[in-house]
Image 1 (cartoon, rainbow, N blue to C red):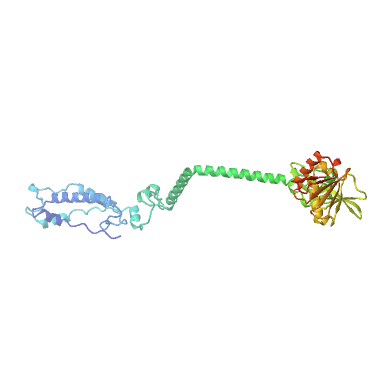
Image 2: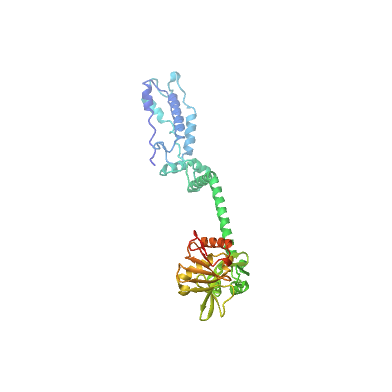
Length: 403
C-alpha cells in the first residue's frame, strides 16, 4: 500500500482568485469547505478508487479526525478588519501573507481504511456465481461478510445444490406421464412374469403329479393291462412324463398301431390308442399267424380262427402283392369284409377275393381306385346277390362285369 501524498497547496486557489488581498477569515472558510468536501468524497471510496491519497490502516487517526473537525468548525480568535482585511495582516497584503496564514492552520483530516476494504482490495479477482450469497470470512460475522462482499465455498455449494434440486423437480414435473406409463408397463410385465413362474412351479411340482391313467380306443386289447404297464408313471409330474418309457411299455402290445398321450390336470394321464386292423391269417410252420395290412404279426394260433380270411400271397408278407392285398382289404366296407373267406394274389394286378357260403369270386385287379371299386361292388351285390352270381369283375369300375 502506497503512502498518501500530501494535499495540494492552496496557493493555486489563491492564484486562481487573482491578486486581491485575502483575509485570514476567508482563507479559513475556504479551507473548511475543502476539508468537508474531501471527507465526503473519501468516505464512499470503492475498491476501484485510487487509494494513493489515503492513509494506511495502521495509523491510528481517530483522535486526529476529531481535533481536525473541531479546529475547522471553531471560529478563529483573531478579529477581522473591515473590508475583509485581516487584523494581523497589513492592508494590501499579497499572496505571501496568505501563505503564512495558511501555515498556521491545523492539518487536513485523514480518513482511515477499514479492514474489510483492505481485504477486498488485496484479494485477487476470482469467478463468483451470480446471485450467490457471500460466505462469512474467517472470524467475521455474516453481516460483516455481507458488507465485505466475500463468497465462501459453503454458499457456492448450497447454490449449486439448490439449482440441481430445482432441475430435478422440473424434470419430474415434465416426465410424470412417461413415468406413469413406464410404471404401468413394468407392473404388467411383472404380473406376467410372476404368473409364468407360478405356473411353471406348480406344473413341475407334486401338485400336478399323475394319479390316474386312462386308456382310450382299446377294442381288442385289455385297457387295464395297458394301464398296468404304464404304472411306473404314477407320481410323476405331468410335464415330466417320460414318453420313451411309455413307448417301451406299449411295444409289448402288437395290436397297438399308434398312440398319443394327453395330460388332463390336475392328476390324469390319458393314453389314446389306435389298434391295428387284422387282414387275415398267414399259414406258417408255427401255425396260423394273424397279420395286419403292414404284415405285422399280431398273434399266432395252431388252428385258424373263425371269421378271419386266409391269405395266399406269393412272396409272403414282404412282397408287393401282399401290400396290394392288404390295401384292398382295408378299403372294403365292414359288411363285405365279413363275407370274405380267402384272399389270393400273385402280383399287384391280380388280387382276388372269395366270398364264403356261395364261393363267389370277386376279381379286384390292382389296388388303384379301391374306394370306388368297393362302392360299385356294394351296389352290384345289392342288385344281384352272390347266391345268383358266380363272379363280380370290378377291375374296371366304369364297366363292371357280373357272371
